[in-house]
Length: 259
Image (cartoon, rainbow, N blue to C red; front, side, top):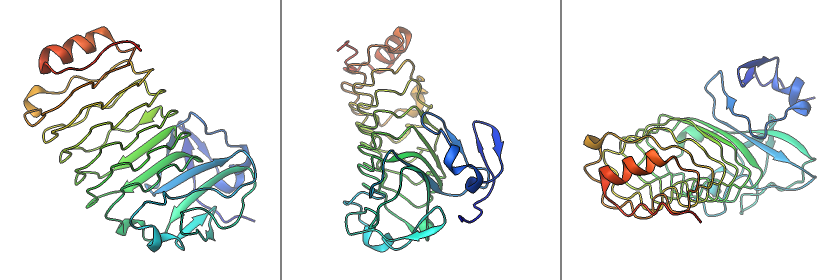
């Protein structure tokens, strides 16, 4: 029997405990809100298999292969970030011991194709978020908190083709957002980011096929931007006013052509 893992909410609806409802969850396309502000990740398996928890290029991988808990039970990962044993089809909640000590998330979940929801609480002191979720092709929702030290966000959600929801998060120190949402085919809305120190936003929304609106940033906070080339290339559903406003204010080659 699985241990009690606390009360949660899904789209505002209270549920008793994770263990009582684990087998009846339908999470795809839904955001997950964490009442207790814990860091956790939801993985979904369609069949019995081993699965990738961490990207095998993550610098801290060797320090965390024995600190992963799947549904409250300790799991062991191999040197590539995959589970050593196979798990039955179903939905799994992943928690990680000492995750608050991580200082670099570069490639942390790269190509973790079974990851569908991520809630990362306290990310203070983490400067590198580049390629953090690269190639997570089934990821639908991400919530990040206390990201005020993050500097490098390039390709952070690159090739997350099912990503629909990204919470607003602190980007006051960010300098590189290039290719950040590259080929995120399902996302429609983007939170308003602080770009005061950003220098590179080229290809930031390249081929975001469903993107409708991107909030116009405060021009006074965009003094450092040097490149926005092809920022909106192949975004056929992008609101025309969005294109006009961005082009007028920034005068970069935004590349707003339909595919």
